[in-house]
Amino acid sequence: MAVSLLLYQGLCILLKGEIRMAKILFVSEYLCGSACGAKALSLAHLQIIEELYGYSNIKVLAVTNGSSTFEHSNSTTINSGAHSLSMLKNCLAGHARYVSTAVVSYIKENALIVDAIFFDNDSYGELARLAKKINPNIKILCFAHGIKGVSSWDCLRQNPTRVFRLPHYLSVNKNERLMAEWADSFFVLNDR
Image (cartoon, rainbow, N blue to C red; front, side):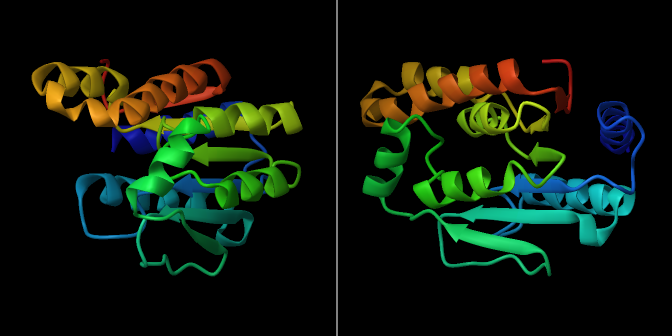
């Protein structure tokens, strides 16, 4: 799997080959919920990182918008709320729609005790910036499932009645730009 090799090479370079010593925080919104391609990729990324760094060196933050949880001995599941008001509040605060204050607090608490944070979505740019401000030595790794900033504007152009989603679209664009700025390494499926 090409992504596996890139992930391995990127982590080895970023962490100077200290494979078994690194503590990694793995953050994903795709670990909970129904089966889909993004969930399969997230689980594959987590498995690769666990194999490289050891199960006990990985902390998992599963962000969800429902009642489902993720079963992992070192995991925390934070439900950021599925209703529109919660998502609007998160977007207006500059975060992705599922990033609540509880997720922000969790990142703040863990930024000083891990060597790297692997964000399994490029919508966490504000969190990456926050982690780097708290700990300039932390390594930020990101896997981009797609270019949501471009697709969100395309969706709005094709269906202008979705203007009520404008705060979400603005948040997506802002967070993708911030992730591109603050990530030490970016992993993608293709060259788009």
